[in-house]
Structure formats: structure tokens, C-alpha cells
Image (cartoon, rainbow, N blue to C red):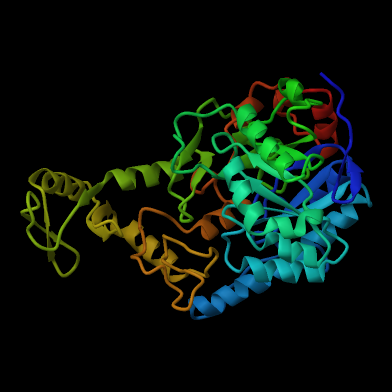
Length: 465
């Protein structure tokens, strides 16, 4: 493998190895600081990061507000304090080496206020901000105000062109790099467009070449591209290194840092990673963000799959072949369905799925009364963790509503990610992971259940493995 040369990013010479940010308390200051101390760029999550007390103990996020708006304000304040705490931990852990970045999702609730609050409260501790999950047009303006570099995450050259032309060209000096995230292989939320087939992955090389060509047209010849999603062994990317067609390249690792001593995830989660098989990570569209996302297929996802399969269309009046009456709900409201769907509904009810929940698409999904109560409670407890949520119908606008019915086919992402991040059963919660996570099981580095330190992992990666 070709030797890796240091790149200047966020104002310092660093190894071109970046720790990918994983939201809701999974990428912490401890892991980010350790990665930076190893000479690369460590990234902590600015999406609902944990606050800590004077002894370093996590302070539980307990919401006291009676309304969504009140809880949303609490969420923002939790996010600001947690981000400042994690930045401080990362800075202290790094010992002044490498660089520290913060990762945020543009479509998370209160993003702009949280960014301002953390960057103001942690001045000098954060050197860069990576941001994806949406089109972050104001990212450059906000980070430039604090003289911090910005790193937009895109999945196509077209998305970057739109960002550059509309906003980024005004703040070109603070662009640290462009993160190309493979929309088929990356973990968490994925940037698949409506023109791309989720079942037909594309080779990232020609897509990144197009991105580089666009960047060159904009005068960004020396600005690195960070390849993210699907990176495991660097020797598999040897043809990318020192390739004049691609220009300066760095590599981001999101899944491998999960299995380190500094990673805060539970022992059960780490053990689960060691035993995954090819195909266990599932690209799906259940997220309340509306984006595709990649997560380990488990009973949590299986329940969502089955819930959507127990679904039929209905109308409030007899129309066409929707001419068969179906009585639903405690008030025995009459809706009209097809003869075949009526038979399906009666069969599901006999199995215990007696609650019919309406969706924004004029369909009914059938769940147990227990699941119905859980869904309604989660929707009621909403604290506005997203700019727009299809599960609860919350939105950051004047009405605080998307204007659509809440969608029971989705789930409360804040609840499940908080619970798994803090030790809940991996079978009952959403577990994000990249599609190469199955390689833990066959990689000899992890034989006999070995869990490395971050430094050991970085050293290993540098060998090509």
C-alpha cells in the first residue's frame, strides 16, 4: 500500500484519517479526543450529546415541559450544554494533538441555535464542523463567524454544486474539505436521491471524480475530499491515494471506531458487532426524517416491517372497489375497503392486531392495543428533536406542525437512539451501522473478541488493514 501523507485540515497537519460522527451520544469527547491524540481528526456528536457533572457522570435528560414547544426549548439547552461538555473532554483527552470536529445533522431540531451555542461556549476547542442530513446552506456562514472550518457531507456532485452556488462560495476560505458519503454503504442516514435505486449500489470512484471536477472548476483544487462509507482496509483504496484524478483524499471511519475501548456503546452492542453476517445491515426508509437509513436488522426493524405489511387502503365513502364496510376503533367507525383487504383485516384482528391506525396516505396499519398505546405515548411525548418529523408531525415552523397526520409506520428516533446509547437491549432498539460491519467477524484483528484502543485501531489502519 502507498504511504499516507499528512494533510492540512482545520489549520493543522494531520493524518488523513477521520473518525466519523455518530449521533445521540455515541461519538463522545472521549473517543474523539483519543482519535485526535493518535494524530487524526476526532469527531464527537453534536446531536443530543450527553452533559456531565463535575465528576464526569452523565446527567440524564429529563424533560419537564408540558408542551412540545417547552420540551423543544429544553432539548436545545441540553444540546448546547452537552456539546460544550463533550468538546472540553475531547480537548483534554487529545493533549493538543490532531484536530477535534463536531458532527451535526442539519435536519435535527434547533440546529442553528445549538451550533451557535456550542461554538460560542467552546471557543478554541472545536476546529471543524461536519454536517449532513439535509442541505445545510447556512453552515458556512455560522462556522465562519467563529473562524471554524466547515465540512459539508454530500452524496453527489450535484448536491455540492447547489450548496456552493447558493451559499458556500461566500465562505470558501473556511471550507476544510468535502465529505463524500457513499449513500449505499454508510451507516445511519443516507443521501440517496429519488433518481437512485437503493438496490443498485454504484461505484463511488466515478462519482467522486465528478465531484472533484466540479470542485476544480470552483478553484478548490487543494481542498481535500473525505471518502466516507464502506471504508475498512485502506489497502483496498490504494488506487485512490496520490491519484491526480482525485486530488487530496482522506478517509473517514464510522463503524470501526464503535468497537474500541473508548467507545461508549454497551458490551452487548460490541458483542453484536463481532457476530454480524453479510446482509445483516438493512437499508430502509422507516426513519421519521424521511431519509433512507442503514441499521442492523433486528426485532425492532422486523416489527416496523411487519407493521407496514399489515396495511390496507381505505376510503370514508364507498368508491369503486372500496365498497366493503369495515368497523374500526372504539366507536366502530365505518370505513370502506376492498373485499380482499377486508379479509386481510379480519385475519389480522383475529391474531390480536385489533387497533387500526390511520396514516397520512389514507391507509390503515393494524397493531396490538399495547403497541397502539406505545405509539400514542411516544407521539405525545415529542420534544421536537427534528426540524420536521413524520412520526409525530412536529415541525419547526409557526404552527409547529407538518400539516399532515402523524405516521404510525415510523417511530420516535430520539427515544430509541437515546436508549440504545445508554445500554438498552440491542434487539429492542434501533442500531445504526455501516454495511461493512459484518467484517468485524472475519477481520483477524478482532479474533477472540479483541477490542482495541483507539490508538491501536489507528495504528492498524495505517498498515493497510
